[in-house]
Image (cartoon, rainbow, N blue to C red; front, side, top):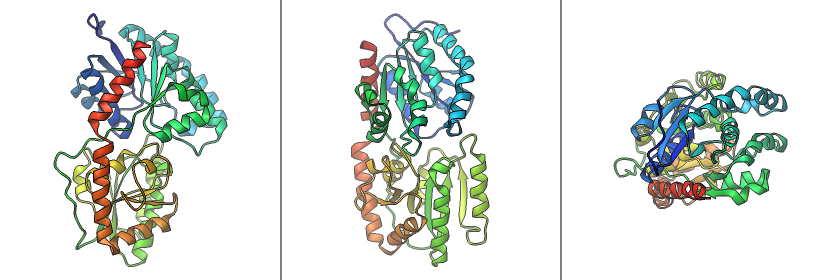
Length: 385
């Protein structure tokens, strides 16, 4: 049974939407370390068991399982939001019960898609901070206002990028005054990055991504088809799994990859962690996502010394300077993506220069130590408010 933390030690409850290990989940792990190093006791709530759980425990935090489903993109419709509101009462009740039992001092909600935790914390009289990893500018304003309405109840907000902060303010301008921007921190590989130049065999593209329509891996497959039709010896390695509810999209990708023009040229690696081994085996990293608030996969590729081609969106523009630390292409444009890959094939000196400058930029701006320091400071400020 959980007990109150020792006198003087504050207790933080982190609510995470799943037990998978992707970008926002990795940031949460480093938030745990930051908070524990600052002297807090940390408990993490996830809905089910999964690969994230042992990593949470390895950081020294306690894990509890609470069935609080996240808001999926399919719910972002007037009818979906009504159904969500109708089914949230039980989730709020479970969350409030846990908050009272653990006697927490602050609830840290690791995404805007867990609004019931925000409501439960406020009903319990406990300060609540939401760490925003999203920047969904493609959705209609009415739906975004519905999604972010509970966020207005928070004591404070942390935005993982300027894109996320700008998104919040575009929907509810008043949120700007309570939001702290903390850029993601990305772990470096265990050994120094080894810059390579492609010489023989197929050029290996890599895309590290959740399998969902927003990540636009269908665009990557069409770009690969164009390259191969042009006589380019190129393969694509897809690293990631489908988000629950989007298994149909993975099925579509696999069906497309099995057609004659792509057969044998696409490898679905599944979930791989850490990613350094697959990055080391690759030549060029691509990130075709239609929207990102930051994009950890891009920075990981840069830290691995790989040239990056990314779709233009608010998040990627913070990690890639076109022609300097990578190449940017229009989102959803398979021909432009294929042309950028061909450019690097034909100009290996450019590929190496992009890799070198991308590595230097990532090492300068997105360190874990800086992230942990800023997270601890942001939480400390909220608890003193």
